[in-house]
Amino acid sequence: MSFFTTGMNHHKKTRKFGRLKKVRDEMMKSLALSLVLKGKIKTTDAKARELRPFVEKLVSQGRIGTVASRRALVAKVGFITKVSEEGRGIYSHNKTSSKSQ
Image 1: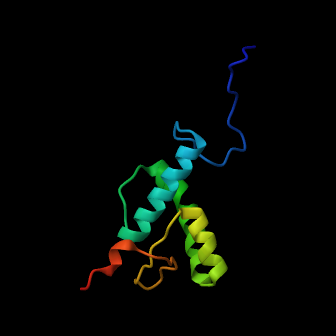
Image 2 (image 1 turned 90 degrees about the vertical axis):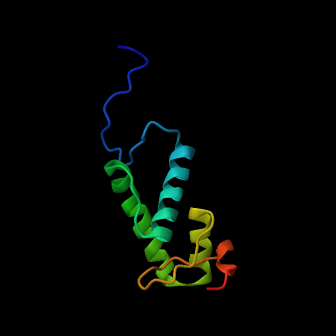
């Protein structure tokens, strides 16, 4: 038996995508932020499947609307943007929103 055997992947619920944990976490944050801001993104099927529960949890928490839930969202995503569309529960501050329309 070799010491370098990785073994089987039983009971592992997250995909690794060939990246380190901190890089995967930042990728998920970036994909989630792009999805919320743009409404749709183009990505691989595996990344989309991994992203869905992450974004659903963010939206559920954003719908609560309390200060604590907003702070939790900022902690998970870094910064979040207030989305004016109906049904979106993500709040925050956007630097580019100062432009008048």
